[in-house]
Image: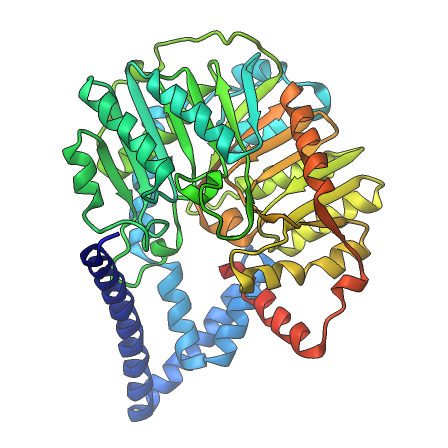
Length: 508
């Protein structure tokens, strides 16, 4: 990495962060000074904060979210009320919601009641209510007899993805949170350049915050010069906006409408253990073939239209109907948006947990939960379900892991079994229950993924893949440490710090 490249990268990042801090400081200074000069402004700001408190208390928002904002407004009555209003009522969020709605009308398939009931007949009766939620909440299509392959390591995922990219004839769609120059991304980039030169429609979306410290500011232009159509999601600008907090955390790869990938794996070397930052990196993904690929094609094109304004002839990408070599079970590709007020990911997870009768196995890098999710996990355990969760033994963010550990005592007391992956960092986002149902995707069990990020996943039912996920969990558990109640005993200061982090959990 050249010194010039580092200087350019550092200058852009520091400038943006400095301007944001300066902007917030000037806003705070203006509010404080005017309130001290004019008594009526002081009284008005306090009145606004009182009204905001009443609004928060009576709203239908999550309890943890209401608690955080109530504390902020009460602690800083001059600033808290205006800050809440600024966060809640911003035109940028409203405009992007409108763009997404328009794109969904272009590509979203809404079933009538007869079609919906007929589609539900494909799903086993015990899991039909879970499928019904996905169908009603987002109009997500149900696909039967699709082929899915569980990929329990980043190294295997890289091999399958590269092979699929090499075989592309028509189009390649990639959407990722993190891209970083290195062996993994460079090998993919070589293929993308070659395919673009051959006339393949190659498109890429990457998140600007995810790549904030990893790519130069002009990287989009470099890719475009190589024939790769590239869009940067939600560029990080020195303008205070709540939309900056909503990141594109999805990982989607679609090749020719015949194969799709999703999961926890980004396009950087630590995900394939080419470099080791936090010990061994354990991740997971899923490869899908068959008509279910259309679900991920739609997700990508909806985001593409929302970001670019470009519309496509739908038959260009959905005309091909593929028949996988082996078929089993039902797949529902789904996604979640933080600006539609429908918490799809949370409800999918809660549905799976509360419906389990024998076991629920969970792999997640973060465990920062709302009271509703904590209650669902404990209730399942008290109902006699074997609930097990594996989290990292080597954290990537110490303050986040400290918050994760703050939930251990309560969950263990409720009968949930907790394990930490001792070889390193576990980044997989996988749930499985009863050898019947599983979810593989990009969704962490934390407030950011469940409420603030754009996410996606695949809901599987009656597939051999569910058993493969169970076997991977048990194999991973063997090299993980079981956490006991004794391990949860900490000193008074640590409990205070963890309590403060839990208060801030809606932002983590």
